[in-house]
Image (cartoon, rainbow, N blue to C red):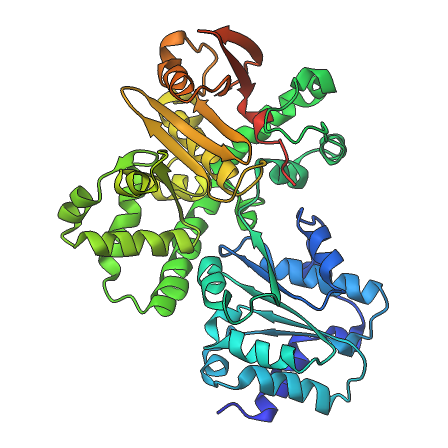
Amino acid sequence: MVSKEDIMGELVQINYWWETGSVRALDLEEYRRNMFTDLADALEDKEICGIIGARRTGKTTLMYQLIDLLLERGVEPKNIMLFTFDNPLMCEDEGVIEKIVNIHEEIYDITGKRYIFFDEIQYVKDWSRWIKSIYDKNKNIKFVVSGSSGKLIYKNTSESLTGRISFYETDPFSFGEYCCYKGSEGLKSFLEGLDDGNPDMMPVDPYDINLKHHEKELKRLFNDYILYGGIPETFDKELSRAHKWLRQDYVGLVFYRDLMELFDIRDTRTLEELFYYIANTHGQRANYSKIGDMLDCRIETIKTYLGYLEIAGLINIIEYYSKSPKRSKRAEKKLFVLDSGVLNAIKGNDKKILTDSAILGSIVEGIVCSHLISGKVDILPKNVYYWRSVHEVDFVVKKRDGLIPIEVKYKNNVGESDLKGLISFMEKHNIEEGIVITKENYEETILDNKKIRYIPVWFFLLKSYG
């Protein structure tokens, strides 16, 4: 049982702005992610804000930035309370959430609206039930909660907090966000004003919007993004140190803190071997039966563990496109490591891969996959597939108004033989336009009476990055 004194000690230590009136610069980060504006606008709504996503993608920093904004708006410092559930003893106390809320109000004589931030809340058993109880009492409290295992949190709260919570998902940084974080002031200003006014996922010609001035820098930053990925903790590290941290600290914490504890996994060897298998077959179609035979475990275990890895933000699972949902479910899946930096860390890739076209092709395909799935273009959530008949299409994006086939060819010379799958899919489904993502080429051509748009990957990834 957690005592009042224990909670008070934690509150005083964490909420230092009660005394200083400001948030320390080291807790803030100068760069604000794209979702910050939406969260800032939601602070005055009663609805709970749930910040969810993979580990180390900036959830805690977003909380500190929101607290800093509230202080700038003139909110009384003691009316803003943060509590982090990284202490297992605190999480074991079933009623700890209610205790914290009550102690904050009683001991510090709080009046008026309160803003309560709970970080890493997924470790508290039945947390949504306790939040709901307080929320329904109509207390003048705005809750902002965060957690690393987003899909688990969403699943566990979908019923108990229906109509009471909105989720904001933090993926690894998109390429556009990476450019805003690491790029020159001129590029940052350009990207902040980049808006072609077109809700379609097809970008305008990059050279029609004076992008030529930034092309060299964008290409350099994209090479860095290939190597580092989108986990911000690595951005200012030397590459070998960044990969060592990703391999040992990041992946290790996801496995042994997030997954093992949350799901009570006993067969850790199989889970790890499955993840390393995906890294070594990145982007390939997977036969669950063969994987089960190789790892000496049941197919159902493979399916379950793949779900865990997806929940943890380590992999993307792409289904086969078919008008029949049953066929999509039965067909082989394509498996990608979600973040290119994590992939490189696991495989021991260094800067030499930038000259290896075979390796680069699969890494860039994975980056495009993560970009599409994260909702950086105007598509329905998770409606990203692949297709295969005689030839394959890398991605089929299901939009609200139709299908867009996308082929990733990270090279400059793309021939008609490279596009057999794309053309075949377009003919079969009566689609007029398709996309080929290239290394540098931008052009539009007509092939077999179909419009094909060739778009440089470093420009395609900037589209709708907010």
